[in-house]
Length: 96
Image 1 (cartoon, one colour):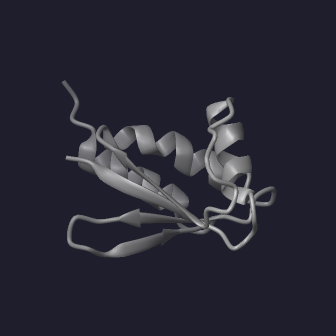
Image 2 (image 1 turned 135 degrees about the horizontal axis):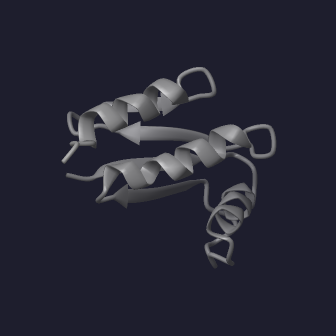
Image 3 (image 1 turned 60 degrees about the horizontal axis):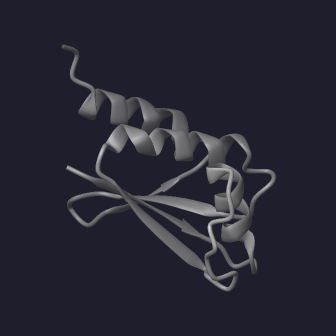
């Protein structure tokens, strides 16, 4: 099962700036993009992106949303991201 993360901004080039920094390479995306979406087929892989944006939220004017299977769109903020990460681990981490 995959989860989807979307990034939104109103600031020209902001998504490019964050993604270049996160992936540590030029992502070559259109600087005029206002929305970027990624499916994480291993849901726990999304934790790195969630934490990176929230830990650097003062540097980037980007909003992050988690898309749920039921169609619900959940905004991830500095106030709730630790609970979101905890919830992802509880849902998808199965000890051996």
